[in-house]
Image (cartoon, rainbow, N blue to C red):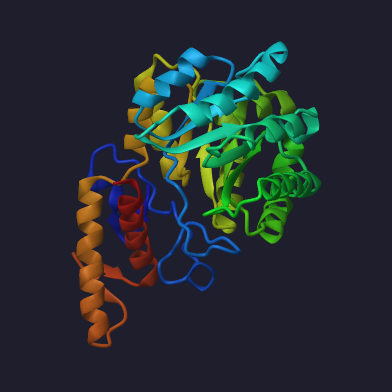
Length: 345
């Protein structure tokens, strides 16, 4: 349970789950605003909130059309695991058509998941999808296992975007997946390459944990409490945050068990994940609530920042706030809460 210099934030709301460490707190690297992501070329561009990331099979037009009535941070038109092998071509064509034809006013991030580079299908996916008049907000690249795959992907996307003959108004947002043992072990060098090789057209914003493929990769058996995945989840959070990126947690497969979903979402938020993958619309509100600060946490943060600024004006450093000594790490935690409030309101 998170404690800040004796102040137990979880007590601010029974069952509160929002992790105030959701955002990079390295002031030297991320600046005084404590941004959760700063791109190489577009440092002022804030990441899109992705508390819930809902997958919809790209081959199922009926389900895709339901997105117009969905309220969610992120909806993903899927060309990968949610699509049968003999429907891949249909999926990419349908997704392109839906990008141009659908209006989803309450979806903050309309994304597309392509197939992995190693599958040999990513080339065709990207070529078709990036012909759409209305480009996806974000492209999700699964099963990344090497920095060479990142290099190939960047070169491919850059070339396709330049072939459109028009300047993008903002960079294409990219999220990668860690889904295998080797992908997890190489995650640091993969993210290093992502930050270094990002272009004016591409910005990397997050890492998703693909738990089922990871279990298959290491020969683990899924259990209800996911204890077999604890190390992998912690490593993904730590590595993603070290590079100023979002960390998206595993899918809760039993979509009818909303209490179990809430429990696992709360756990993930406390671990530092910024969001969670979902597979059914009914899971979205549960997850988004779990990854949001409570009103009590917001009130605490506002009061603390006000007190901090008052003490700063008098030249004081650490100060007493409601019985706890407060210094800069605690102030950064409060700023994180307010930033998430502002980006998800």
